Length: 100
Image 1 (cartoon, rainbow, N blue to C red):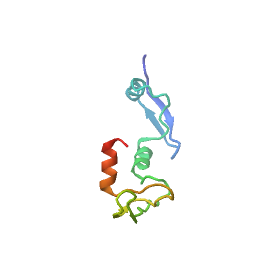
Image 2: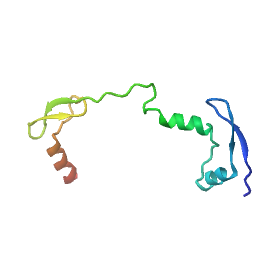
Image 3: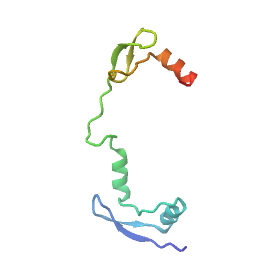
Image 4: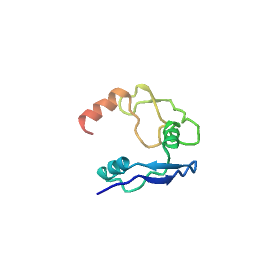
């Protein structure tokens, strides 16, 4: 299949950019179905922004609780849900490697 350069418009800034024949060939090789929507500058800006959108970084929660298996006090990186067991690192590893 013969590819030719194609002019597209960026959905973010509205600028016209060229989708080269080489880029189209690459897309075809990867079985990508959609044409690019953003120019290289807007694509780079979008990739550089922090994950999660809105600009607010998600705060990590540290909760002190007791292990459901051995009873030892431990800290976990989430808020425990009522009715679900919470394990310390050692008990978690034991269960993980035991296949439970």
